[in-house]
Image (cartoon, rainbow, N blue to C red):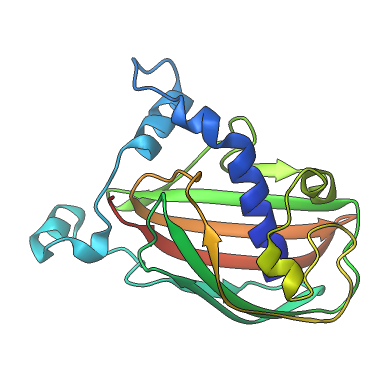
Length: 216
């Protein structure tokens, strides 16, 4: 998946759904979704900052998130070269700095199906966050439709990166650049995110990320 496509997806989805997440309140659990969202909403100290004794109750199963990690997980439409995100851990609200480079091998255009998985570390495992109001582990039938309503950050346009379909086949480079995340909300903890894109069922690209969010 094009690094910048995933970045734009995150921005569009977070802007659409942050308000609904902020409105979530702890209450008696009516179903499994309520329980999972309660776990998501709780602030947790990233495991890299936990003392050694913390892991004994989980059989010393430490988190994979000792630092920001990313992996190109396949696909024929794009290839990742680099991805950096800081600060590490991230802090919300605040400013994040993102740098990336990637190559798109073939034009990416509608219908651009996107599968987004969001998991949070809870205890000794990761819990998948369900899709609620377009936030969480969702399947978007056409990312191009979502991006039509997104505002393209100046830093992207200045580097020749458009925010709308089609995404033409060429090399893309974004030098480390600041992005305002004042309106975003993610409770502290360790996260696993995976984004996949397909066109008419054909697997075009994939990005797998492990990151941490610090307590503010």
